[in-house]
Length: 462
Ligand SMILES: [Zn+2]
Image (tube, rainbow, N blue to C red; front, side, top):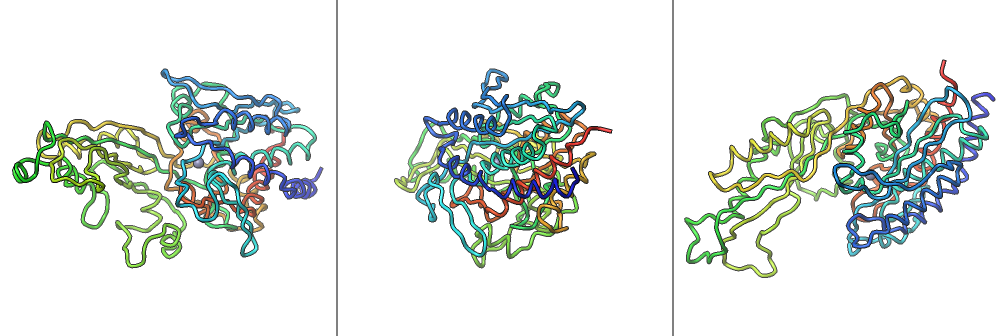
């Protein structure tokens, strides 16, 4: 079979788009981790069945236990190729989704999929349509095309579809602690959980930032007291905390925590206008920090306060001083920064900048290592697959401001293998936000790219 006919065959199979409907069905699953009765198991069972239907008869639902914690249901398959000496590919996606604030959605309700056609493309709206049920569907489409092309499996395929990527993943700490586990070994790992720079502009993700969440608790008083009787000399915990938090940035908005490092790389430029529009930055509001947008987004630390406990609410403001307040600080880390070193840097900063005696605790909530891509032996095949699928030679090596801690664990477990980060989560997808959506043309192109890549790997080693 020549390469040309193989590609034509793959085009036909992928263009059938039968998994578009599958994606719609999956969006109806309310697979959020915060739901009191999350239907994670049902979703996992459904997905395992879908992988069996494309020929991975070993697809099953399991769990991973590590340090006393058991993971959400995990879809796993390990299917041997029909030929000896075949390469091994691990396909990763996740089926859990971010919670959604239903009141803020305008196009549809989060778990009621809706198609909207405009400007020559169709987008499917619904929570998880992009992040990351599109990844599940990409793998299904690519595997189906590959099987039909080869009437069998020409590469060894492992599938990992986890159910707690958006919360705190047992899987990533397990793989980090057990890099020798054969279930996670592969020559090439495809993580379908990022996206292109824009619809139709293919990009490989070359860096991911790490992530660290820390709770800082300030306690100044034994109890709430009246501000008229005690305010002035008595320190209010909330005010003290706000002053402390303000030291995390300098006057220009750059992070001012010594020990949080920066990473430099040749990222493509991020157009400011597009960035402002996608981020919804209000007209007249300035951006924060110095350096190029790409440096700030992909290579430098970002510090934000994402939650408060014990702070005065506006619903019943009272003239009292607050005794104890906790802030959750979310830190994005440079791709190569060690999260433990970052945690120490935050602790040292808090200690150095807080008034004496007020900090009760600086407690880590979660840590995740970033990733700077290694270009392995299959790198050229990866780029060719993207270029062929999109019929454009523009292949950028972009960064991602977000974090996927499992990626660095999988890389450590598979040194020398390629880790491919791609997917359908381009900026318009608005992942984690309201009105999340996925582009049908992106799903088609990315599924085709993945099918082409698997096809290219389907040759015996030489
Ligand atoms: Zn994701």
